[in-house]
Image 1 (cartoon, rainbow, N blue to C red):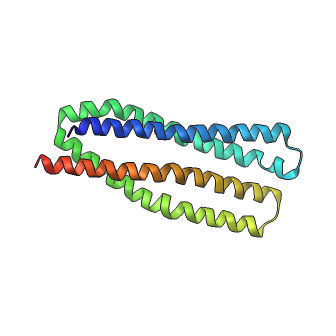
Image 2 (cartoon, rainbow, N blue to C red; image 1 turned 180 degrees about the vertical axis):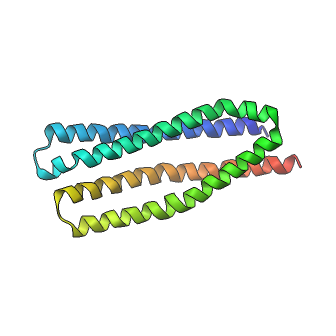
Image 3 (cartoon, rainbow, N blue to C red; image 1 turned 60 degrees about the vertical axis):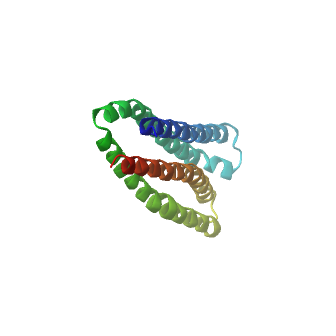
Length: 169
C-alpha cells in the first residue's frame, strides 16, 4: 500500500470538496446582489444582509480549506520522506482530532443551530428574522452536506493510515 499516494489523494479530495463551499458562497453573494437590485418586497430586501454574510462565511471557509489542503499535498512528500512512521502517526492523530471535531460540531452543534433557526422562523414573523432563519438553515444544510462527505473520507483515510501503521510494526 502506498500511504503517500493515499494521503495525497485524500488531500486532493479535500481541495475538491472545499470548492463546494466556494461555489455556494458565490451563489449566496450573487443572491444577495440579486435581492439588492431586484428585491421589491420587505422579505426580499431582508435577505440582502443575511445572504451576504452567509456567502462571505462560506467563501472564507472554502478558501481557507482550499489553501490549507493544497499546501498539504506538497508537504506530505517532504514529511513522508523525512520519517514515514512519524508521518503516519501524526496523520492518525490529526485525523482523530478532526473526526472528534466533526462529531461535536457538525453532528451536534449544526443541527441545534438548524432547530433554533426553525423555531425562530415559526415564532418570529418579521421579514428580517425570517430571512436570517431561512439563510441560516440553508447555510447549515450546505455545510452539513459537505462535512458529512468529508467525515466519511476522514474515516476511510484514518483506517488506511492505521493499516499502514500495523503493516510496518
